[in-house]
Image 1 (tube, rainbow, N blue to C red):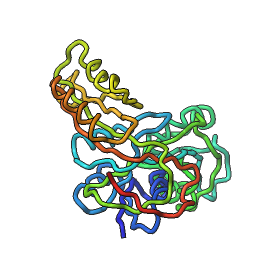
Image 2 (image 1 turned 90 degrees about the horizontal axis):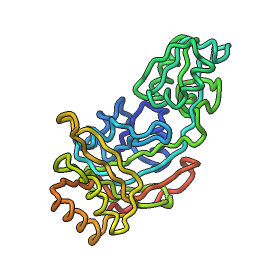
Image 3 (image 1 turned 135 degrees about the horizontal axis):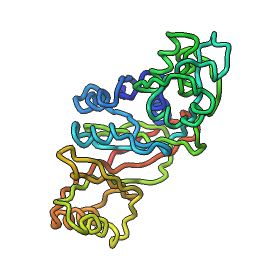
Image 4 (image 1 turned 180 degrees about the vertical axis):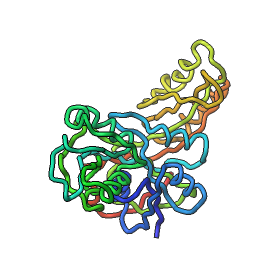
Length: 296
């Protein structure tokens, strides 16, 4: 049985992402993203599922930085799921949101609900947790005047009740989750239709000179390769040193990508392929039947 690690504990949105893509697997939760990524690199699990980007709060920098600086594990798939943040309380709680003394959740979840907290829970102390699932677990085991921000799965898992539904500040709240695998081999996934294919690359410039980034982007542009995202991150080697993460909306091929790599190498750039993979979008998690997915 395939062993899949995810950012846990049970009840996180990453748990929902796993259920959306797989069934009949041995799912193991990890408290942090680094623990999960270390486990897949060391061969303790077959796959890892971790959050990559939220539509409201942007990139999960811990995931990107750990993939670049600490582990060498390729991305083999991506799934986008809707994020519905609810206010979860102890079943014995008998007040409204203004009566909450402390609210727990992950930093991204807190940020996604900033206006709601400001307007309805202005007196509550905010405390961050490693995940929304952990926040729900903490509320279930603590004071009735505490609350968590999380999903319905977390409420069911830890015996909480939903005090307020959909408290996130923006309706179009989705998160991208990456599936990573150290040893490339076929994996059984649910029968989902890919909405697109991507290839994610990391590019490091040779030095900070005028027009360097323009030359990098031109290598893709004149070949009519569509870039859906480009983001800079610090190299952690000193101020002003950055690498770029670029998402190309097409699978890796034997013609265009090698040509891009050769052109960038001639410019003195370093380029690394982080993965070429199908992308799925799920609006109703866990309702389809499994079928084999062949990794590229």
